[in-house]
Length: 424
Image (tube, rainbow, N blue to C red; front, side, top):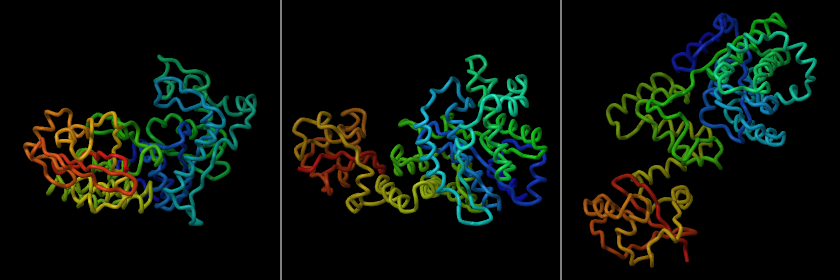
């Protein structure tokens, strides 16, 4: 399994490892786990990094273990948090843990007898712990001075950290010990902000079991623009289709900055080095085609939402960016792209007699009627697929849909919005 570290290294997925990990991997397959915090009913795209760590482990012949934190979620991980998070009820944690479990199961293979993934929930062993016994058997192996050195604690000392969150490190270390005992798990992986918790578990296994366990962390993903990865103007990008639609999910990746796309292809896909090189060379020849971004968007969307959803959003994107005649699009494609405007935002008497300038200004494609007039007169506006050059022209009939009528507004070759009115 030594090739695992080589694979992770060129992809930029290694931030730190414990001593001896390469030697252990050289001896053969091992089981490794990643923990996920059920503070939300859905994972975000930032969670894809540890998911990819598990997937690469499995592809290298290892056995991945997904740990859903139904127990630790009752407390909350202070890592990377500036303040104490609100405590969730048992019911909320249980619901979130179950929904996350279903999301995670789509990323790994559960059928191969040798490398089959497994999902566990630490509520099964943490919620029944007896406090006095836990402090006697586990707490005695941790010193306050050592815990204060961990970044997850140190970063919160000025703002304050409760004993509840301070104790989180002990629980995560105990998770590792439990999986070591019950599943032969020798490796914990996670983001670099988890390094203190990971090494605490490694040390606990050594102290109690005399065993050699290991840790591996991946760097936190950043964007060249300085923006926080996985955030858009609309908020976080979720794996749950109800929170972030497959179309919005695809658009996030298609709009990745040119400076980031090669790194993201390495991090979030299984594409080989030569394939990524070819994609970047194609990008160099024709940057406007966004070849690597399209490959990245298709790959990630298919993995999260399935091949069928991926194909639908690709077609919708082709319509949006003027590569496919909107009049030929299927009804479900229109539903993805439509933007509903309340009647109060439409011009009085809105309809076929509405001038082009008002139609365009109402769609939200421009900031003002002045900008609408300028773009129309410059030939930069299309209505229902036809270029419009007269700001005062009228007679635009809506395109007919299955359950609504709509107008298709384009600014240049890029389609920015759909303005539609309900069918009568």
